[in-house]
Amino acid sequence: MILTKALLHGAATKHNGFTKAQLLALGIQWPPKKGWLKSLVGKDVPLESWNQFLRMSSTSQRAIKTYRMNRELVYKQNNLCKS
Image (cartoon, rainbow, N blue to C red; front, top):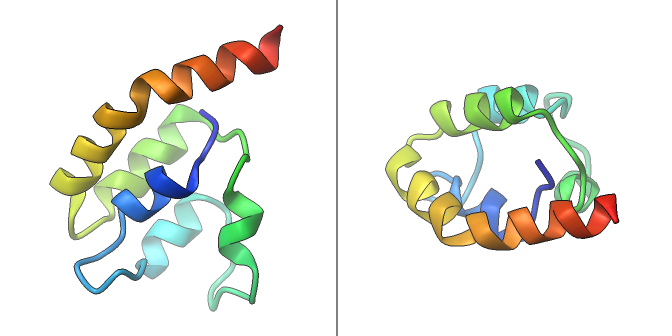
């Protein structure tokens, strides 16, 4: 699954942050270093890592809604990368 800024922000906490558990699920060390978000955008992560990231979100329902809204875009991106 290729991460986008919209997908990541859709899974942010109600204070527009991220939990330690979320970042660890995507391989980001705690505490995160400057530029960690930019390093994730465009990264291809296993679907299980993404699902774990969503489960660790305090706003997982919002994250799931954002994921569904962007699913078609993500699908298109993944297919373009394979071409």
